[in-house]
Picture (cartoon, rainbow, N blue to C red):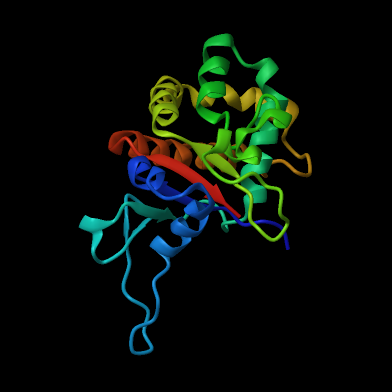
Length: 207
């Protein structure tokens, strides 16, 4: 079946106030809406995918629903692998901005050093128990700010990735089907990180 990616935008101060061992559960509890009289409470989308509870003003954690994928984590992993394949062919200014934007989201320069797998330096419990979900990605507010700046630098230059994508990724299994699919997902991540940085919140991705 594979992993799904459940992405949360959270107020880091509120999340930091929760004991480390309870933080993953707190994210799930905050965005889970129980049925009332047999009906699910209404949620509505904001900015093309943010699912806010009806009492939006008090919300400190919001789930994001991707529009360009089925929610499967493999689509993000494939895009990250595509970037890893093509990046040697990309001019340095674009490559450096894309590296900053994508690292820790869908790509890791050194997968063995991925902070999400170790709980992000203690911010979450380490993935030592198979019954406990590990963190797929972790982006604190200070990182989100830098990624938003990097996205601004690279957004208008995405077309420069077309030839590197064609040379290294097009037609290969385990890579995005088309360049348009690849850039659509990048643009959606750009929208996500822009909103997160605007709020000075952080991102957490869980399976």
